[in-house]
Length: 307
Image (cartoon, rainbow, N blue to C red; front, side, top):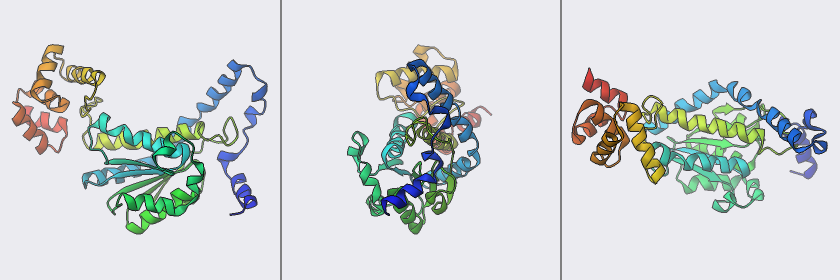
């Protein structure tokens, strides 16, 4: 596409418009600049709230994929790609899932996480190759993330994913985006023009972060990774998380810190099992079997024992 063609395309995007509320932002003192940014940020969760039905559809597809042993794959460029990688990387320690169950792909590869590689987004074939490299299957879910909805890397990836038969989801911040027209499900929280024109790491980036958090958190809850509102599959991989594991057992069972530590020692720091044996009095081996029979749902395992 020519430069003039690209300029015309950008002019049609809400996310590239000029915000009339910040024309004078370069004249303001620091406190007023920050207040203006804060005021604009408050519109983001409202925009996300309007697309909850679409987010819910995506969650249902993701849950189905997880139940089949398949994957959730994020792909994007620049800030969008970094946010996908961030959300994916936090799933194993938070929910105790295997590495690779949630994947984040970014145009330009790992180097693009810490160094701008914005030119990497211009090739659709790079998006195709990224999905081929992970051996994408029809059971997987691919979420293409692009504020503009026109990033070639994401377009190429989504088109390839549809050819494979995978579920496709588009996350953009513009109505009727190109990727929204390609994907099975289009999630489009429209947050309007940015405080600084075109700096979509601001409101649009925040909206994307909120949606990605919702996709993984809701999906993990739906497959039994929580008990009440506790992260019972957390992987205690450092001192803080070891302490958090004890606290979770205490919160779920009203036991003492010493009792929580004893239960965790018996279960090799498996929080779910520690809670189950504390509540039911089962031995660790029996509790493990009960949890397996309950499909990993702690409430089900507890109610089956205490009914």
